[in-house]
Image 1 (tube, rainbow, N blue to C red):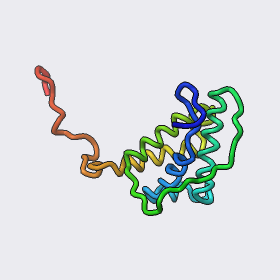
Image 2: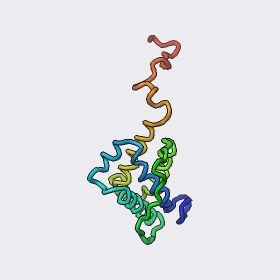
Image 3: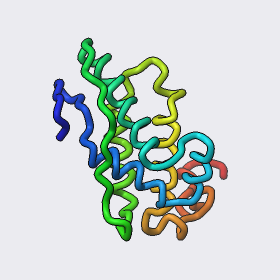
Image 4: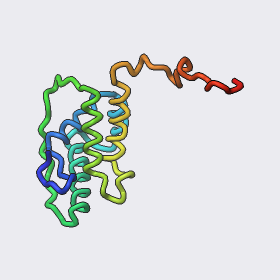
Amino acid sequence: MGTECIPDKFIVEPGHISFLAQSIYIDPILKRFLLNKVSGLQELGQVLWDQNHRSINLALKKELQFQIFIPKYLMLDFTYEPLQVYKSAVCYQYQSDETPDWDSTLAFQYTELLKMCAIRKFDGYEDRIWGYPESIIRPKKGTCD
């Protein structure tokens, strides 16, 4: 859990931010999205870190000291487990959504896209029907159809 606890809001750990930033490699669409928005993983990490601090400052109603984000990068050959990427992004969003401009921040946009990319990597996703499975839709008894 994070270092600055309020009932259930906290500053996320640097390792959490590093994990989210490094998760850019889960799908090439993330790198394309961030092109011309950040210069690299360090800057992306700082964007995520700053938004979390802004959010917690509002939640706590005080000014915590902003710090330079120091990355704790994981192994370069790290295998991304999509469900963990998704859950880490959801946790981050919950901890960082207190600012009035949250929906327009790069942190929000990146983590939303990250969640979408992670879902598409879930086991069995590609095997599912695009649309809906007609075989499970049956008319109720007593209807004309």
